[in-house]
Length: 208
Image (cartoon, rainbow, N blue to C red; front, top):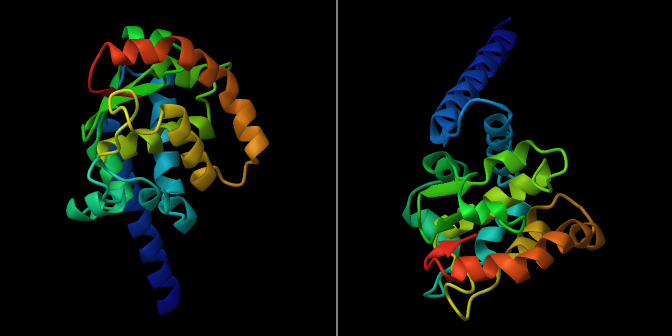
């Protein structure tokens, strides 16, 4: 009798902890109530779940800050897990920002910034490439910037946004083939080359 009771208490504790995390996350998502907020919330939670996988977690060692230190070191200095860092960030609706007019931009932030600006309406669109796993990969991408990952053109010698996303897909894409990832990203990357790089370059410090 004792063992089933102990298991039940552990289950109740786990459910309670998850509920507290959900409450904290909803408080961090500063997006008006509706489907966009729900899907952004799901993308963040999905990113958190993916980063609990050891293979995906290695993405923090795949990238470095401007001094060449792995991002895992930056996270360690904050005394946070990836999930805790995601819950520490603030997610703001930037749908009306002109950067969100570009289909090559789904979110943007500043290096080591704690505010992530989300093109929220795209997360609730059936036609949007940010529905489902793509939105989760985007959240991980922005998490890396919050830990100090630079990006071209703000940092001339840094990787482009498309290359960062490709590497995150490789680590955290959950087994999708390279062909599938390329098919998903190709139209977005093409538009990004023609428009969003010009806009981002005109706003120093903005990373997408």
